[in-house]
Image (cartoon, rainbow, N blue to C red; front, side):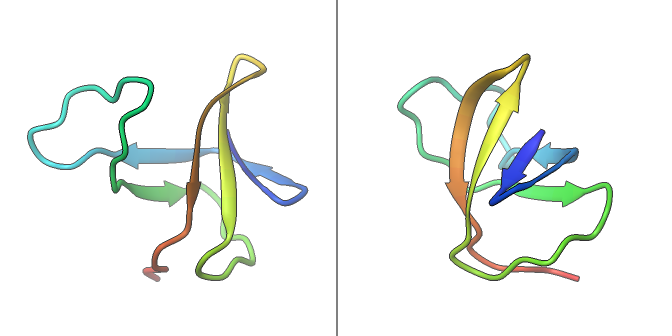
Length: 65
């Protein structure tokens, strides 16, 4: 689940080629495809949560339609 402000939405993460896993403390640029469109803008912060725990955080770098 991705949390943008007060909205939560499911999305698919695509890791960079050659990256199998991301460990705590790593910084990566990933592509995310949300299952439903939502209003957002570049530089918007978001959290990635799984099982009620925050497992990642990020900033929207660019929007591809």
